[in-house]
Amino acid sequence: MNELELLVDFHIKADRQGPGSHHDTLKALSFINIDSGKTLKIADIGCGTGAQTIDLAQELNAKITAVDLFPEFLEKLVANSKALGLEDKVTTLEKSMDDLTFGLEEFDIIWSEGAIYNIGFEKGIDQWKRFLKVGGYMALSEITWTTATRPAEIEKHWNTEYPEIDTASNKMHILEKHGFSPVGYFYLPESSWIDTYYKPMQERFDAFLKTHKHSETAKAIVEAEKDEIQKYLKYKKYYSYGFYVAKKIM
Image 1 (tube, rainbow, N blue to C red):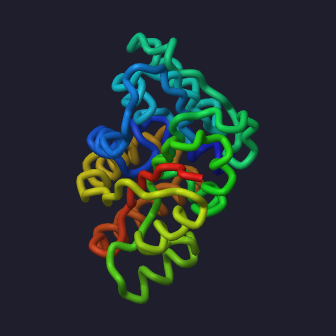
Image 2: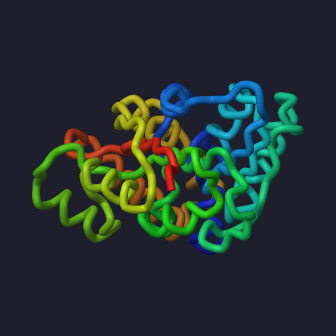
């Protein structure tokens, strides 16, 4: 297996491919004015194995198109949907998030947890906006500074990894610039990093290395994840995922 295939194999065994939780998904949903009398159309972009897709399908009268680049993730979502009797609500689409061909103003809600960084926050909003009805909502979780200043080491790290990292106020300015009115914001608590993402990840390290015979690539993946965990534990008061919910007004 090459590095990308190993990464997919490592993360497919997780409930979530990034920080987040059932509680976070429902909290973001609580900011949206839901019309219970209609069947909503939702796009979940960069869905991974779809923990949040399942949450949305269980909570809403909706038809959800779950989009991801990796077929293995989508296959797991399909299996989970069927097991829970939600297959009529969830359709999957294997597609890059920057190559979507949905219809103009097709969706009532566009959802994306921890994935928009793959094309960039502003680019994602600019590209996906046309698929959203006026009056519809965009709900995005995005890596965000939680303080005005921070130590040089972590600032350098994130500015290298993802130059669009910024404060919530600047992210909201981007939403407003693109015709959205922010209706809700919160940042993910520590439990959404540790309990639902990092601890389960740590529990998979040994089995992953054994399965792949401690190859150099497998070991490099594990070491990179360990380094990410240590950085978070050291600097967690300076950054988190911010969850942004905004209404399209123009």
